[in-house]
Image 1 (cartoon, rainbow, N blue to C red):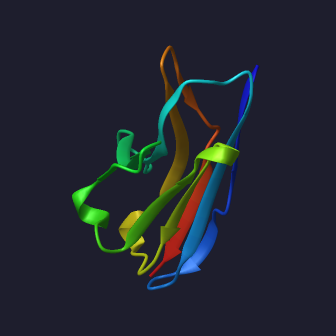
Image 2 (cartoon, rainbow, N blue to C red):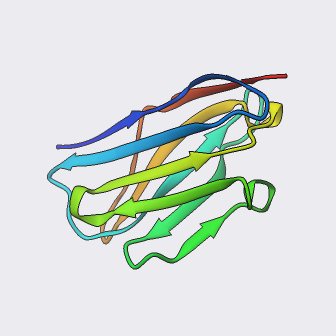
Length: 115
């Protein structure tokens, strides 16, 4: 069984920072990439940032320059440092793990940015 444990969400004022973390544990192997998606109320889930185990990143344009993604391959952990948060960043953020055979999703952590 695979578990994705997310942490770091919360309430922050506009311009503030948060750091999301996600650790994959259990019977998981062959990880290709880890990252984050988000879903705002009434909207579809969208990619925020992905990072491969070799360090290649794919970051959504609206968050470039404000969000930094990093991976710790030894710990199967991905971090998302979010700076300069905006009201429109408010959403549920879902951890995502892509392996050779399966994709895994976390349960989501709420990020709320007050204006």
